[in-house]
Length: 543
Image 1: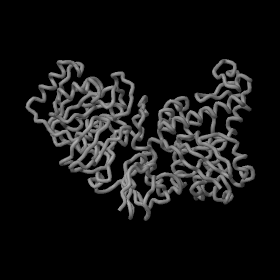
Image 2 (image 1 turned 90 degrees about the vertical axis):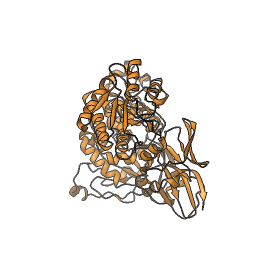
Image 3 (image 1 turned 120 degrees about the horizontal axis):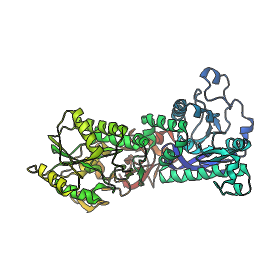
Image 4 (image 1 turned 135 degrees about the horizontal axis):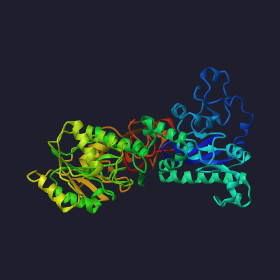
């Protein structure tokens, strides 16, 4: 009997502990899978090509009741929660990235989410990262031993002839002993250990964008997965506490970037003012902590809605500057925006201008940001006022911005309203709410009753149980008739709002208790899994 306990998720990738017949194995890992699953040596019809059509695959059904459970794109799933599943010949899928992604999405959708995934003969150091990013957990040494038999020296960045062992590229025990097989196995183990570390940090995408550059097919796989937005959106958490590195053009297609832009355009409700000013970003996050933005805010003086134009996020309203990824991204600054950046960010600005028709929009920008703002204004049919002829932080430019806003009335800075609209898709009534503290220790109260705080890691709102009374619907997890004694486990979940993602703040609703906490997995996994923590509970209220 197998059991897979997931410890950490990063998109489709996981770390965890696989137990089978008394053996425990930390995943992701490469091991002697025949020793782990003795039945592998005598399984029938388990080597069906992944590209085989349904008519062929159904003629050779795999054996039932054998572990690992064979799954195939053209066969019905027979795996249950906790099983280890095997996808034979997956290494051949690399040859066609579009099929790779289509098969992967189909298999993931019909397989329980708390199953361990085994790709036999598929992993070598240069493919391990993309395999884990695709949701595979378990590997063997067959593929890497074949490379050794062919006299190929393997690294995470590519393959070389065996004489590379003597050049000092690697100084592992295998290289010191001139044992190519041992070096290659060590290289695979080391890469998987590094991948596990990146998963724990929530930064596997950063590693993928680096690793895949040496393979055109791997780049294509990453991009095809990005195009499966609805599928990948369910897997990616809504917030992380670390840095999101946006170091390539592919970063604009990351789920976090697209989700942020879509929520700004479809959920976010700006404050009640008809004057907006477009500002450049800053290296320091949140922007308000930078000396540059302190000067901008003094010049604006609360007389206009501040919108930060930035790559890759497009547009960041001032109220959302603490929320992941706006308060957590890092991007190389060159002063040049390429055509793809301009098109992507310009489309976001255009849609925002059309959705929220301000009476005046002032562009306090330069370079690529100003170019994009002008293009978006023209596309939206609005007039853009420019207050910059030189660097935006110069005294001349700041004085021009101050003069442009002369006579405009101040408006109420209501960050709570903007953040709640973005996070919970509601028009929150914030009348009577007061703020105390300074970022990152910020609390919102009404009549001395605390309603919300800000998570210091992700910058998102954390409602108290009383605060949930202001969120009329959505982000609820309904549990069976019991009082949680700690975290809520998946067997106790009856239903959950489908919009819930890993990391979302949720209200746990039961017949005998309410609880507030953070989702540890997306809603569909709560319902499809039989093991694991569904909600990490922060506070419980008995009814």
